[in-house]
Length: 323
Ligand code: COA
Image 1 (cartoon, rainbow, N blue to C red):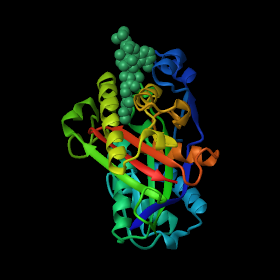
Image 2 (image 1 turned 60 degrees about the horizontal axis):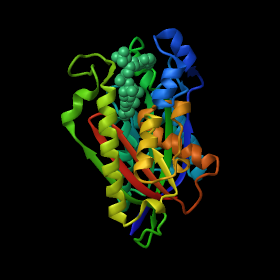
Image 3 (image 1 turned 135 degrees about the vertical axis):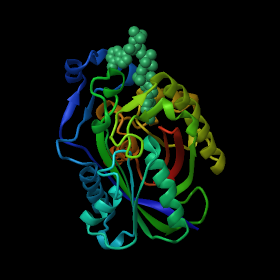
Image 4 (image 1 turned 45 degrees about the horizontal axis):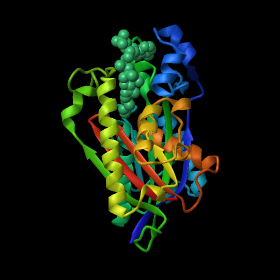
């Protein structure tokens, strides 16, 4: 069978760093509160005029270099984002044009913080079906543009950034020993719209709107849904928690990461954490964390990775990947 093997990955962050101390000058908060409740110490914020596609192109170029491919090798581009440059066309088409890719398909996926996992499942199925051969999957966000900077309950949590992977269809034996994506699982439950949403949009308000969240409720659902979808990935492959070398989770809150790892008896040292440096970068957070752990040599060829995420909708998902 065909397996989708990740042949390159990279992240790209805006230069500007916003610290907790600076936020404490803007709203009624403190470094102590943010650190204790979330683990976040700082986040990156896009410069004026710096767009989601700018960050996406930055990550994509580096991921393509890492994979040793050029524009003529890519035939599918997926950008997972909830903060597109424009209502339409898809940010993926802007990325396609700027990278000089001239064939295949390009489209956006909107599953908020689960966007990268949704994109991975989508790309994997296209590659396995043989419809495309090399996919560029990017998670890219400028959440700073949809935050209410007067709302301390949300503005301290998010940041901007992008991460990208190149996926290539390669022949595998069909077992857990194969390199590449071993299994993906995605879910949605639209009944929870009001717990995490943006109060604007082209059809409803003709405005961009601001992010609104019931943090405590989201936290509760996140722990339950993530546990269920991790079990699902393990059941589908017959793997055990002990087979996982690295957990590469969506980075929303250090407490959610710790709680989930504890539930599966996983050593906290096996969980890749970037939330302290990046905050929650929504669809960009999983590929940013992946890139960080690949770049510093933690993730090595043959390692089994568990990717998982949960976001607005609600949407959630997991994947097992052999590096
Ligand atoms: N600084 C200081 N105090 C703050 C604050 C801030 N930035 N934000 C909220 N508070 C206050 C609240 O007003 C509240 O005060 P009160 O007790 O006087 O009413 C108190 O801190 C506790 O707020 P609460 O919302 O109960 O805190 P919490 O422990 O639930 O932590 C979150 C809040 C948002 C960090 C937490 O709920 C969370 O991480 N939720 C999940 C969010 C998430 O993962 N979202 C993304 C999913 S993709």
